[in-house]
Length: 50
Length: 226
Length: 227
Image 1 (cartoon, rainbow over the protein chains, first blue to last red):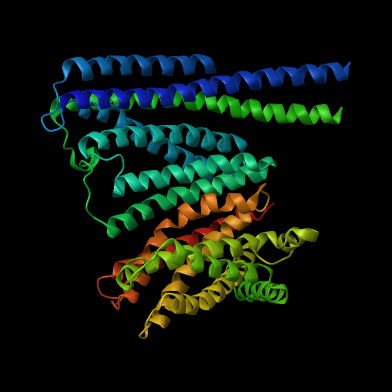
Image 2 (image 1 turned 90 degrees about the vertical axis):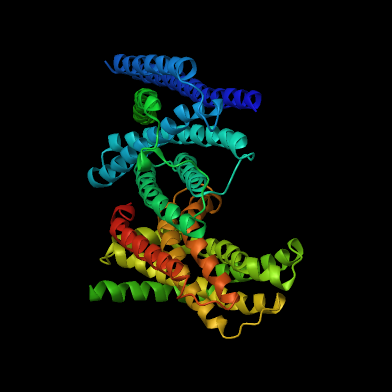
C-alpha cells in the first residue's frame, strides 16, 4: 500500500509540474516569436518609409 | 518595471513553494487515513483556488470590456482565463491520480469532479473559439459574452449534478468545513499564496503578449497602408 | 415595449415563413434526428426495462443535435446581402431582434421534436398512456432554454470561421444542466412517474435556467449586436 501510495504521489507531483512547465515553455516561446515578428514588422515599416 | 514585477512575483512565489514543499515532504507526518498520497492536496487545492480567483477576475474584465469597450480589459480576461484553464487541468489531473489510489479508479462522476471538468471544457471552448474571429472588436465581444455565460453556468451545473446524485466521496471541501488538521493549515495556505503569486506572474507575461499582438496588428496595418 | 414585442413577433414570423418556404434546416434537422433514432436502435439492443431507463437521455441527445442544426442558422441566415447590418441599423431595438430569433428557433425546434417524438414511440414500442403531452410540455420548457442560449451563441459566433463546427464546442457544455433536468423529467414520465412530486426540483431547475438565461441574454444582446 505504502509503496503504491508513494509511487502515485510521485506521479501526481510530476504531472502537475509537467503541465506547469509545459505551459511556461509555451508562453516563453510564443513571446519570443511575437517579439521577433514585431521587430521584423517595424523594420519593414522603416524600410518602406525610407 | 513590468519585467521586474513578473520576476519578483515569480521568484517570491517559487521560494514560498520550495519552502512549502520542504515542509510538506520533510516535516509533516503521513496522514492517518490516506498515508503519503494526501500530500497531493497541497497542489491540488491551491491550483483550484488560483483558477477560481482568475476566472472571477476574468469575469470582471469581461463585464468591464462590454461597458468601457477598452481592449485592456479584454486582454486581462483572456490572460486570466488561459492561466486559469491550465491550473484547472492541474487540479483535474492531480485529483484523478489521487482518486486512483484512494478510490481505485481514475475517475468518478461525482459533483465536484464533473462540475470542474465541465468548467474546464467551457473555458477550453472559449480559448478555442477566440482565434477563430479576425476582427478585434467582434473577437473581444464574443469572448466577453462567452466568459460571462460560462461563469454563470458553473453554479447551475453544480446544483444540477448535486440533485442528480448527492452521494459524494470527495473529501469535505476545506472552505466549507474547515476540517483541516491544525498542523496542515499553515503549509496549505502558504501553498495557496504561492500559487496565486506564480499565476499572477504568468498572467502578467500573457498580458504583455496580448499587448504585443495588438501592437503587431497596428504595425501590420501601417505596413499595408505604406 | 409594445412596439418591441410586435417587432419581435414580425421578425419571428419572417424567419418562420422563409424557413417554411425553403425548409432548408427543418428538413436537415428532421431527417437527421430520424437517422440518429435508427442508429441508436443498432447501437443499443434494448429490452423494455432497459429502454425505459435510458430513453430520456437518448431522446434528448437527438433533440440536442437537431436543435444545434437549427439554431446555427438563426443569425447566419441574415449574412447574405448584409441583411444583419440592415436589421441592426433599423429602429427595432436589439432585444426584439433577439427575441424574434429565439421565438423562431423555438418554434422550429418544437416542430422537429413533435415529428420525431411519435416516430420514437413507434420504433421503440413506447406506450404513452397520456404521458405524450406531458413530455411535450417538458420539451417546450427545455427547448426555450436551448433556443435562447443557442440564439445568443448564434449571434456571437456569426463571424467565426468554421461556425458549424465551433458552435457545439461551447453550446453543449453550457446546456448540460438543462439537459440533465430534461432527461430526468422525460425518463420519469416514461416510467409513469409524476413530474411534480419528487421531481419538482428538476422542473424548477429548468424554469430557473430559462429565466436566468433569458434575462441575461436580453440584457447582454445590445452589446452583441452593435457590430
